[in-house]
Length: 368
Image (cartoon, rainbow, N blue to C red; front, side, top):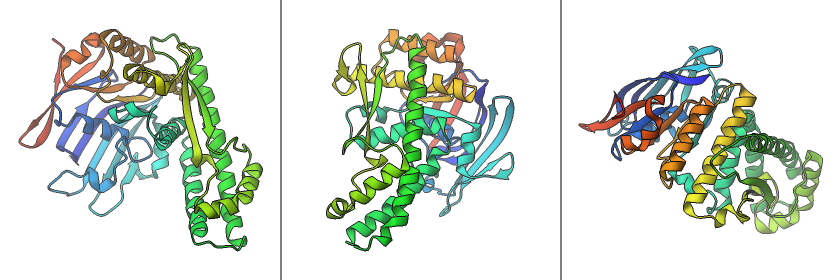
């Protein structure tokens, strides 16, 4: 099993101090808006590589007005091991991480934990700009392949340098050669990781009986088919250099990929579905990602579902809870009132979050 059994928060967002003990069941968190529920989910999201579900800088997570720096610690049960994880950020410094009392890089979290999330801002996934879908895609890929982060960082760094040369109208090809080789090698790995992740998710979707509509996913490159191997991608970058110079930026590559979803049962693209249907398609994708990870990693991921009941009727809400419990995942879920979790019954741990004197407070409750 993969779960957090203890979470300690210190000067993190609205939390001056807070401790949550969890037993592996889904954790249902209710309370008024602004009480600090989503801040708990953000804290849990930081137990995976990256900047968390809000993509915030370390200094923005500090409790105000003190701005003393913040600290999170937790006990993570991962498969057959237990890890003590601690992270903190002092004012003006980057976030630091320790796993089992040893300093570690962020990518190390990907070896011990898998965390997926669904937050209200993602409800517009199918109708927003391609950048948002690409970010969502790469979070899915990263959940299967933690080294994907290194490939995307290498690609982005080389592309920024190449774009600077293009904007400065540098003509000498020798300035470009090394950068384009780096982009081609990293870009081919990015493409391979994305294709493999979508295959795993597709297999998990086909093998599941679910109450949520399953989208068919495809990757589209804005400039036509993209070479899959590094040699072909290198040739494309070199051949497109003159056109890129006119544009002042790189026009081909994995950074121009868009993810499209098609709902075959209705014969429509996800972007043409209703708001509720789009949410259902998104939930289906998160659940498929989780099922795929359960097979690949050996345990279902930790799920973070913020205000998940929005746009869901009672039937679909109950179906979601049933699927989460059947999966065996520890899901941290938020809602404004305990009635949003009535269908869970005793299958979940219930927490109430309130604000008292400017601080977030948590107490364990039972469903009425």
